[in-house]
Picture 1 (cartoon, one colour):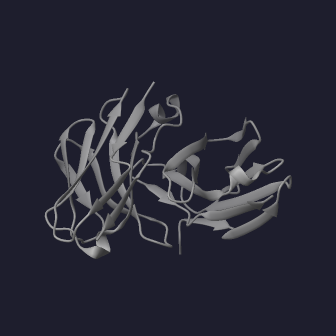
Picture 2: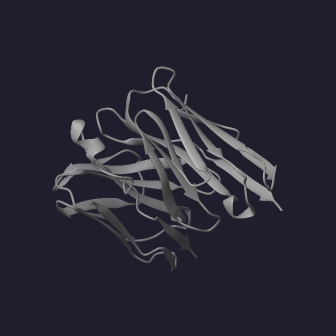
Length: 109
Length: 117
């Protein structure tokens, strides 16, 4: 069983749609990260969360510590949002990160 | 504020050649340091982690090794690359305990895309 599960694995949306990507984890964590990876590109950190909600532009990330669940929302999606989105948690003892397998998002114009 | 540098961003190397990827962290001290690899179509897998200078733990037996010559420097190496070493390599850092949340989002390097030909 993976420590971090993401859903969906693949997502195709029309430009302008509201998008939600989900992440569930099974370990005690210090923080949860949302990362973005464009095809052939590097990693970009979007958010780090330990509680509540954060917003950056059209991106919103929420976390429910009791339910061990986080969501990444993209409002008014755009083709440039097409990328793989990865959820990662930092285990409470700080000894390693666990990564989800990623959600591949394609936004069609 | 802390930053993390990983280089190079992309690398094409012939089979049998050596490898050296470097990662440095600034703005913190005594971090835990990690190397992860993402093979094509798969998630990121922990290769090595270090809790201090000269202290390296290996999670997966492979053709690679890691070293931590300085507190904030982590190096991934190979003496002879194999085709199967191709993939995306990511350096990361963290801290144990309550100090973690003082820092911002710069916990991950940009990654290195290695192609062995």
